[in-house]
Image (cartoon, rainbow, N blue to C red; front, side):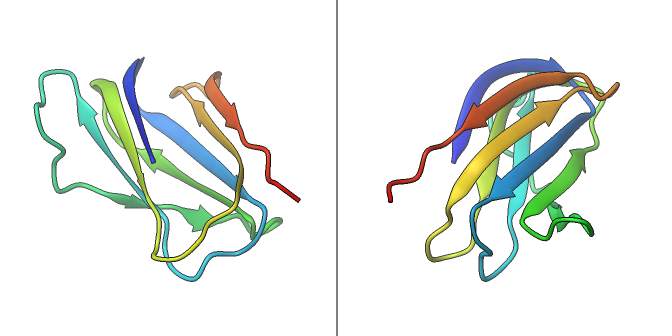
Length: 101
């Protein structure tokens, strides 16, 4: 899952709400302004204690993030929502997904 042309100053907080557990880690990688390729840096999202279906992490950069990539394990993933907040915790992007019944 990729989102380009973000233009959001880091650090960024990312939260993913799943409809069901996945078998493996979900990670994120990013590009900052001036980078033409994704670097080797990745952040593995961790499950929240109060809700194991909510995963979150911090993208620890001070530069402007222009491109975000979510890396899912092999298999299916059912996503309910993805949220990105800025370094002050202010929501800046939100995507919601409907699942077919």
